[in-house]
Each structure stands twice: as C-alpha cells, then as structure tokens.
Amino acid sequence: MEITWLGHSGVKIQSTKTVYIDPFLTGNPVASITPEEITEADVVLVTHHHSDHLGDAFAICKKTGATLVGIHEIAVDAEAEGITAEGMNIGGTVETKGVKVHMVIALHSAEKGNPAGVVIEMDGKTIYHAGDTCLTYDMKLIGEFFHPDLSFIPIGDRYTMGIQSATKAVEFIQTKKVIPIHYGTFPLVSADPEQFKKNVGDLSEVIILKPGESYSL
Ligand code: NI
Ligand code: MN
Image 1 (tube, rainbow, N blue to C red):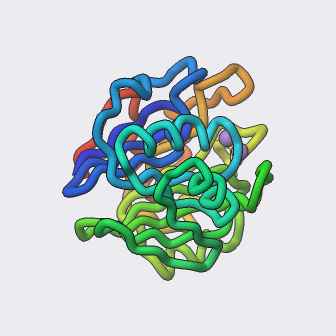
Image 2 (cartoon, rainbow, N blue to C red):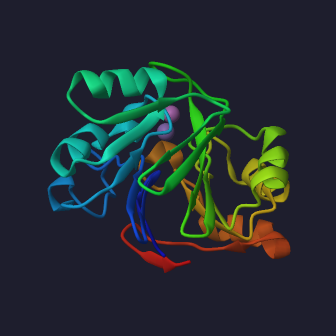
Image 3 (cartoon, helix red, strand yellow):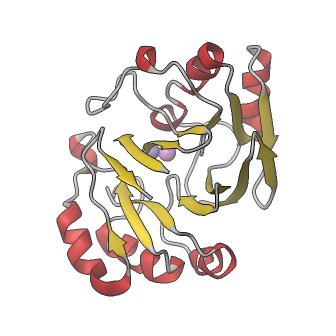
C-alpha cells in the first residue's frame, strides 16, 4: 500500500483501490499535483465542508467516476451534480468498492453538515484521518476500538490541534505510525514537524513527508 501526502490534509492511498482524502489541490500553494493529473480514483473521502478539504473532490469524482463518501449534507450536494455518493454520519460505517469507512467525531466547524474524521479499512490496514479537530478524549476510544496502523493528525495549530495537543492525541490513539498534516500550507498554519517527532518520541513512529512524497505501508 502506497501512501502519498498531497500537501495540507490531502492524501492518496494506492492499494488494490485508489482512495483520495480531502483533495485540496486548486489554490493550494504546496499541492504536489493538479486535479488534471488525476486520471484514476475509486473513492474520494471528504472530512468536512471547508474549501481546504472539499477542494477538488467533486471535480475528481466527475472525471474518474469515483464514489464520493462524506457526511450526508455533502453527499446530497454531490448527487445533485450527478456524482455517485455515499452519504453517512458520525458513528456510521459504509463499505464501497472494497473500502470500509467509519465516520468518527471531530470537533471543529463546517459550512454544511458536521465536521468528521474517518477510519478506513482496506487491504488489511486500518488508517485514521482526523480531519480538522482539536484534541478530544474520544481519540482514546478510536485507539481502543480501531487500533490504527497509521494516523494522519493535524499539527498546524490555530484551526486545529498544535504540536502539543497532537502529541497527546498520539498517546490517546496509540497509533503505530503517524503522519503530521495541516501545516506548512499557509503562514497561519506553520509548524515544525521535527519538533512534533521529538515530542512523540517512542510513543509512535512519526513519518514526515514532503508534499508529493510517498510512504510504503
Ligand atoms: Ni476546516
Ligand atoms: Mn482545514
């Protein structure tokens, strides 16, 4: 399974299926690819209705025929544009094209619907993408219940957790590996991933990627 950070919260998971999460590419100064370069996708996940997460999700679905998975309100909008969508809500699980998606709590805001995190099970791996959120005690439950192999955790502060709270989140989630996201995109979300790695220490393996870089899980 190949994991690629697209910059900001955007992630590509390439295994037997191709999954994109929060593909904010257009208008993203650090995006590693343009939506035009994406020719294949099976599932596109959106954590919440903010432009830096919804991004190019609809355009990618239209171009590739991928199924959009997101909270009910986003799915309704997608369907109105002719996109195949699986609407869901927090606490629910959807399985589409061999990809199992559990929607979990994120504490944040959104223009439509609620913000969420997602736990994905595919090809024997469990991956948690926290979306935009503060540190929540519920993360302990995510760890206990799902045992993520890999987690994507925001560290950029101001709109999400910063390094200190993200470090505590790693302790709660008990994730085997963690990739920091939602930093370095704009001056307002600056954070030093090396400091995060130092803070996490032996709690988990911190994988620092540059936008466009991949990691083999
Ligand atoms: Ni947001
Ligand atoms: Mn955001």
